[in-house]
Length: 86
Image (cartoon, rainbow, N blue to C red; front, side):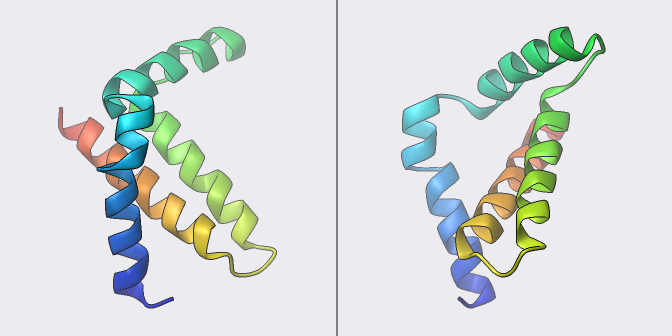
């Protein structure tokens, strides 16, 4: 998969099906942050959720290349950048 294909696929997912399925990214990641924060007993921001999910995908890539993990990691990082700007 070429770099532009990875980025295009990530873009189409976070701005297409995933947004339609899960709603606005900032609302979803803030809800996850509250739940994770309560579980861990610490404050977590929505952007932290994005970064941690990207790290999960990177950990999976340690076992070898998987296009879906690369695409998902790019998507999470893009959403985290957007949430940080809000």
